[in-house]
Image 1: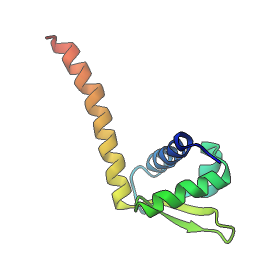
Image 2 (image 1 turned 180 degrees about the vertical axis):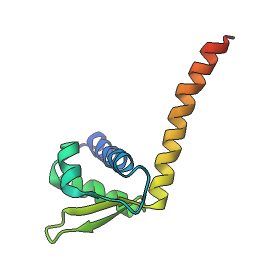
Image 3 (image 1 turned 120 degrees about the horizontal axis):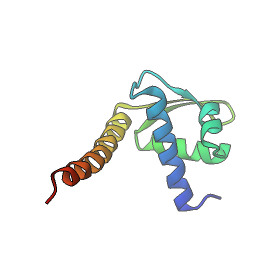
Image 4 (image 1 turned 90 degrees about the horizontal axis):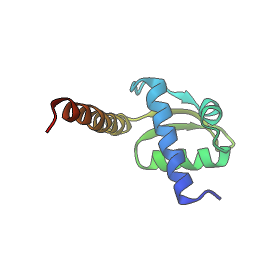
Length: 104
């Protein structure tokens, strides 16, 4: 059983991989096997991460008969979350560069 820290890391990894692979287009998706291979997450932990994220309304999942993700896509809410995180990172990086450039 994965620890809380691992489960959070798995969920973050799924979201980042989806956002990067689909370039924020909710009409595109990623196969569960690609996520499994790219992230190196155990199949059971990947399914748990996808179940959680789908429950939060951040992704949609098409499931196989064996309860493993067949196709995973970001929802509008998931894209907005990832864009907000990207903007936050940009502000930290560019804001720090601007401060260093202009001095006190």
